[in-house]
Length: 324
Ligand code: PBG
Image (tube, rainbow, N blue to C red; front, side, top):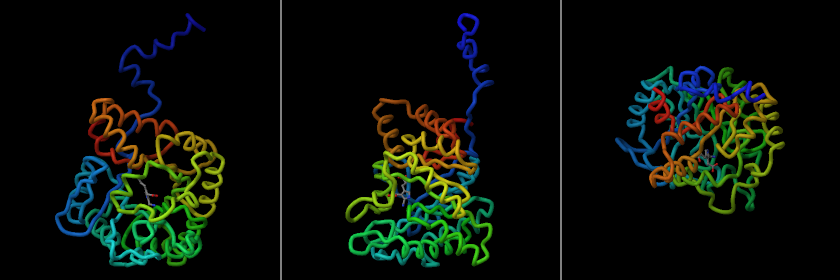
């Protein structure tokens, strides 16, 4: 009770604040999303994600080396697929010599100890820009699961450590896990996007991969933004189906969900600070309206404080430079 207790006593200087700080971030807390494109010596800035680039495999290898030397040892790969290769079934997704599969192999050949995760969803491969096969204007669940599990297998065969299904079909974790077991890949990891909301914050990402839905929206598979209990249900099922890590996405608007999961389950949690959040911080900072470095650190710490074990973040490199 005041004046016997004065909370400000613990805030008098940085040393004391550092001593009692409950949440800290280190390079171990970050997963770096990377966009791969076809070609040689290509590095293209994503227009709505200033200072973030898509890279051909040769350039990507140099980038990975730079990340590794900063202590960033986990990456999450996304591939931009040629428009000509897209169809309703996302057939290119299961091509063993596809861009994603080649990227995984090249990275693992050169950096075997780097942790490689790969995105699994049909949208970058779909002529409809949806995460699943379309029939009569509907996204069909079970046929999609079959393709997603085959796609996942090609990633693991190429050397990926983890697949990261981001599609939100029901039962896809089970389908993928069952195929991995059948093929003897007992240590292949699954990081499931368990609670992925139908959010407006994925806009810049869809620009980057040219993967906007061709019709409608993603609300019949991604979660309703108003729901909280439903996220618990999604996580429970994904754990039962064999997920190793669950992801919450987006980001900073869903910290309550991260905390709920932390309090209710014993499973590692990842959070995704998505493209729209990156774009918001970048554009406000460019106008001088917020301090970019502080915004990056503050939001990163917030994810960990909420209960995330690690964060997929386009700011990973910036954070590491800021904290070193
Ligand atoms: C693909 C996928 C998306 C993101 C990750 N995987 C887009 C979407 O679901 O529409 C978004 C990532 C970001 O915005 O940074 N299913």
